[in-house]
Image 1 (cartoon, rainbow, N blue to C red):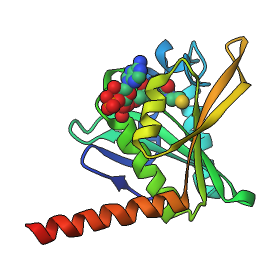
Image 2: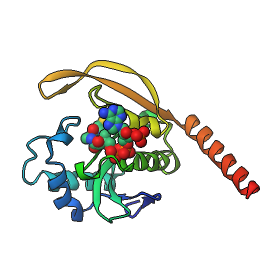
Image 3: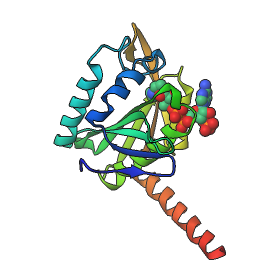
Length: 195
Ligand SMILES: CC(C)(COP(=O)(O)OP(=O)(O)OC[C@H]1O[C@@H](n2cnc3c(N)ncnc32)[C@H](O)[C@@H]1OP(=O)(O)O)[C@@H](O)C(=O)NCCC(=O)NCCS
């Protein structure tokens, strides 16, 4: 599993690796990342190396899967996205950030769609969920564009930067994914038939 690659036209994703440490240390240091995540700010020296080492342990144990997101056009590391299963319920939570210079290029959406595919096709999950702070609508938009469905607002569920914050929750179930995939397949067949 550690040599897996996910890709579409915009993004390539592979397991996070030592070579990503300098980019993570640089990009994760921006306050704009910490504002809406649990990435610490200031980002301490050595934090990226520690993050990568933990992620690699999770890959080895197959209990957590953090991918590097590479922008295909430039070949540059743009951010990361992880999926963290809860095996007893066959569900998982997703978390992500994209480095500030790469915002607004569709990379988070591309990566989330690829990760959802990985979750259902490879991990055989039943449910994939994610949540964002109300102050971060761009992340909600990413979840919507990846066909996740809004499920509700958890009040005061996170303690973040000294205050309790609400979280807006989204999820996609295997049945939603299969319906979407079947519809996309039918669309393709129709297009091909009309060519
Ligand atoms: C949120 C984040 C992941 C988005 O990454 P990205 O690669 O820029 O996302 P995309 O380009 O795929 O899509 C962003 C969408 O949000 C929209 N958007 C941007 N700012 C917005 C705002 N203030 N309100 C509503 N939508 C907004 C964009 O227009 C785009 O939607 P569109 O394609 O319909 O126009 C990125 O900004 C980030 O890493 N932020 C800091 C960390 C973070 O918030 N992580 C997620 C924690 S839940």
